[in-house]
Length: 277
Image 1: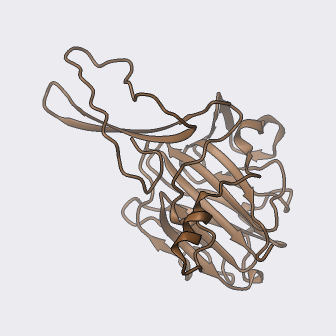
Image 2: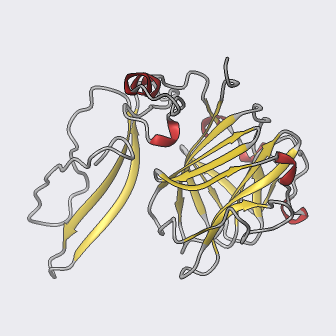
């Protein structure tokens, strides 16, 4: 298991000599934390398997835990040459992050396709152009954090964004499994295949991944599982949204999918302070 994307994996040996156990003990935690886990097992036939998952340890069910070690995408003071200053910047946890998943009610939000909420997860149906608006508009500068799990062979995960008056997409893992594409859409009128395009698989069926989208006035960054996928800078007037993906309220973000069911384990948003404030 690990409690941060760039933390070491900690092995927790288990013993089982009969049927598969219904539970496994991870020990005790002395703080709230997200936990990614990987189960390595050997079957009676000698075949080895891996099972992946994600959970959260919370004292208060309403408070989202933060990792003690932030990945590089969450470091805000990266321009400082002083390593101590950088370490201090990592230790500052978000104070205004909003847990959208806990509070949203799919039956009250505009949507296409079918969206269902069960316990603390949200799922969308498998269809083309599935999407749902988020409850409230974002701040001028913001960070959107999601933990997602494709329930089918991965295809397009759609994250509708807003920068100023401009709407645009973050499109992830779209297209054939051999050559999926990711990037921003549209940039200067160009859809996927433009200068922001990343080529390669990001997701695996039934495996959770963390997606972080940071939107600023002249920049948009996208990280998946700690890996930088997009780092675009430019005039935000170059960003636009295809009419196909439009939603009624142009001030709001939206989630979407293309020919793949996704389960959302976390949807949260954090307003970012203006530079120099």
